[in-house]
Image (cartoon, rainbow, N blue to C red; front, side, top):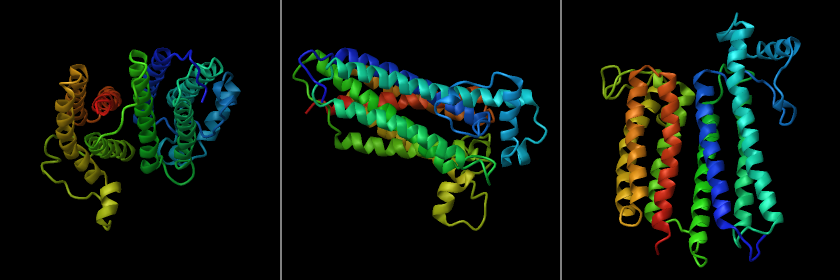
Length: 339
């Protein structure tokens, strides 16, 4: 699809790395939006007209009136001033605006490369698939917001987890494709990397950790305790809500979710060390990136909990989480291109 003898794999790779950088920024701003409880400030989804923010006092009052109709305002933010509303509106608007910009930053160059027939054989449909994932992510974002507009005072933590995990999966897919294209630019006979058994295992272990990180964010489970390694003086805190099944507590109880996230982290570290050791003889830079990312992430996770969920530390934790996904993708790709 879209191929010719004038393909430009290096230019395509550079473009994809740029888009990956935008997605990392998007993940951080999404984290800040959640931490500042800003995600429900815009109660409508207007993909085109929503690009323009309120510009007049009347428009601001109309947006504020819409927000005052939902349970979050009525039960938690009763009496909020217009200035306070503008502060939370800013983060949600910025998050949605960047999402639109990422869509344009992916779609417009893709169309240009396709028209110029500069996409190598076998990569056209993969790039279209990544674009479709991005479009799906916008729909998932609205599906998530909808969960907090009628009965709940916040969004569903399960939907938030889906939203974050699809973003990180898309990020990994873009980085993987960029690495394939970079290899193709170096050697015209280079074939795409494949997923090895070790790569799949590490991916699953990391997926579980990312899932529980998202559930921690959605349930505000980081506030269960400000202690480490104990949780309120105990190793195992026990459930905070009664009457739940084991499976229910595993995904819905803040203390249990927090407990799993902090201790599954060490299973993830073990898996990443194995990956990094396997990668080191092939590409030492990728090995260093994996070690650096998980080391920083562990320290930031502990610091975030012990600070009582300081917003700056929590946002950094989310940033390094996205960088860890990139480093791990790099490592798995590295072992997958040596047959």
